[in-house]
Image: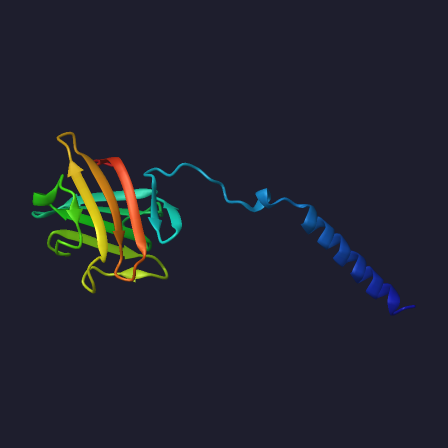
Length: 161
């Protein structure tokens, strides 16, 4: 009987624990959802919220960096999209243009790294434009060299943000 009592006690605790787990709802474990600041980008089949952006330019390119992380400068997950200034406002077919000259595209997350210096995009389009008020329109729908789709669309990114 001394052996059976501890076993029954542990069995009772296990049953109580299983009952508690089975009665809980999955809603308790869902992360808080909110509308992202700058829409979503799609990588593969995953839709990822964009929480920070950085828009910059040099003599030849307008460049947008987007990230699901709050601090875009040190983000470890990001996409960089750039277009040569002469091509602003034009729908760029990436299969007919040169990466690193006409367009720039890079993607990095903790698992995946797509470098623009390794291979060009497989197919798709990039459209970037800027109006006189400084608002940047960005539409990207491309396939990376391995066939992974990437897309992002935002019509009102502000240079001053």
